[in-house]
Length: 182
Image 1 (cartoon, one colour):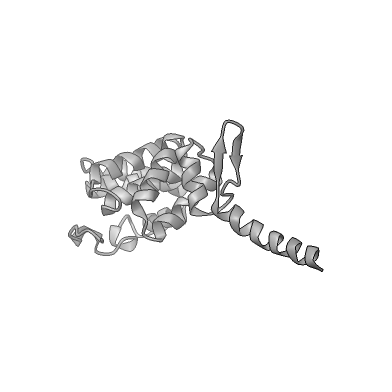
Image 2 (cartoon, rainbow, N blue to C red; image 1 turned 90 degrees about the vertical axis):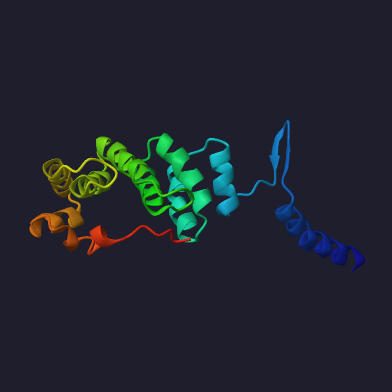
């Protein structure tokens, strides 16, 4: 009976120790964190920008960890993920995890649009139509919205059907005054 009790104690104690102790040496990593926020940020720190890692940025920013989300989205945008580019725009446009920067926001929208992203096209179209972060150009803005609609983006089609009335998709946005959310 003594041996059984000892074996049970060891089995119970081992997973607890393994969860809290990651060891890295020349042979690799012992007990690496396999999931969670820490793993995602470790991926970013190690240059891993796969789809799952990049998509996790949504949850990170929604949890209010905007600096971490900015770091993740920057790496993913640099790797060519257009969804990360539109999130970088959102962060810059709202001063989350950094300064409010409408020029940078519009630039991220343009990069995503140039890579064919319908949301990037739509957002850059709005930027142009409002003159937000770029010189106002209503005709070019409508052309970007039209491309997004042709790509099947429902909100772009909604804006077209409203004769490009910006209040249809973002009511009163032109009257907002910038105030940091945090």
